[in-house]
Amino acid sequence: MAFQHKKVKVLMPDFSGRGGHSQHCYCLCNALSPSVDLTYLVPRKYESAHLPHAFKVTTSIEQGYDKRSRLLKGAIHLGNLYRIYRAILRNKVAIYHFHDLRLPVVDNFFLKLLSRKNIQVVYTAHNIMHHERA
Image (cartoon, one colour):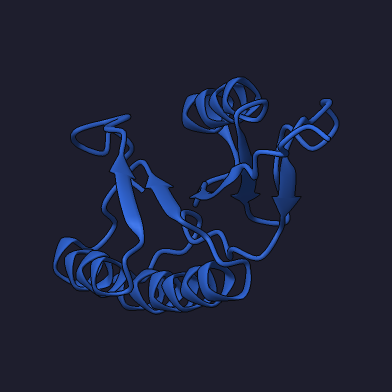
């Protein structure tokens, strides 16, 4: 009987679900999926939804780019972090792979929380600074 290797569980959020960042994440998820058990969290308006996926997609993130109020964007991001944290615990995720810091002070607190739970964190800098005014 052959030994079955369990794939490491990875969770990757995409807060926008659109544009170059989303296309990058989609390609990265497809490339990683043969090696890991990957869940990709996206907003309901996910522009690559029609393409084939070799990974799990969950539409549990709320998109906040189109909101004008910074307070509302912050509240949406806090809600997204809560949903991400619940998904990490529910799915017993070992690695959280993210691409940007929306609210650095809050996000750093969130990353420290994950560290205390022994969840590995991978950060891929897609854009060092946001280039869209919105």
